[in-house]
Length: 81
Image 1 (cartoon, rainbow, N blue to C red):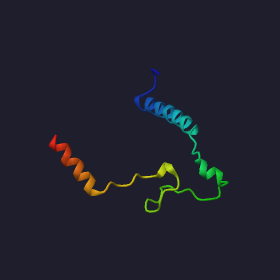
Image 2 (tube, rainbow, N blue to C red; image 1 turned 90 degrees about the vertical axis):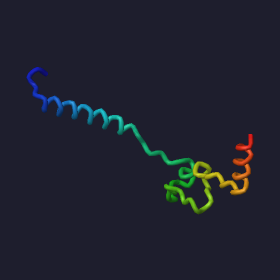
Image 3 (cartoon, one colour; image 1 turned 60 degrees about the vertical axis):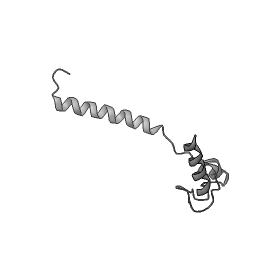
Image 4 (cartoon, helix red, strand yellow; image 1 turned 180 degrees about the vertical axis):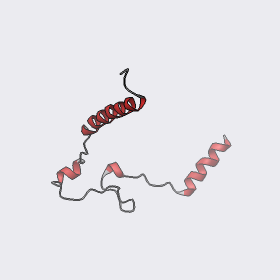
């Protein structure tokens, strides 16, 4: 390494980092969820989920919003204490 210039060292280090990153990424897979597997992988995945329609998959379920009166009542009772 003594004879290598700064640019050559940088290129060598870049090549090592890129090859290591490539090895890491080659281990990554995109696995479909269970509902997609059950459908024989024929239906389209809902990514991102349709937030207007009710969520069929619990993973995408969004909790309902609290009525505005309840939140205001809780906040006022907390400030009284």
